[in-house]
Length: 194
Image (cartoon, rainbow, N blue to C red; front, side, top):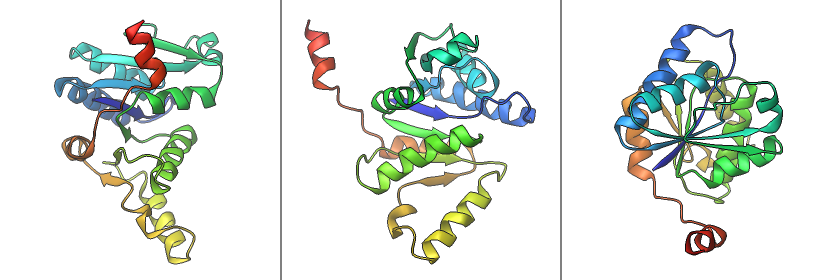
């Protein structure tokens, strides 16, 4: 299964978040999955990919050219896809993924989370979306969404579209219970036959 992991690239976070990313990367590889990431080599993004590779896993990084120019690309990726911009990056990550795992992160991580979450609520996809929050960073977000629901701004299925977890084992149990491999596109089938 190709699991997309959204996580932090900040260099100013507590080391416990880096350790969590390392644990996730190692566990992902141990379970035989492929990591799809934002293609960065720093902070949690770098930690999850390095740990996955160290444990024998395959990594696919997707990164916009502007970040390559800033020299933060994960050049060690088994496959590094360079996109023109951030929107294309997210589209490629989405297309390459069977499931989504969200670790603690900043506004970029939140943007990725909300895009996948909204698409799931709207029925655009039915792939698993799991949020791993062992330190409670996202608790205010959960309360905000509950308040939005109470005020009528969200559908009841907003809560069914995401699994909130606190341990790595619990997160992978949710991912693996509901994931189905993404079917290749017609273009990909043509390339494979060509």
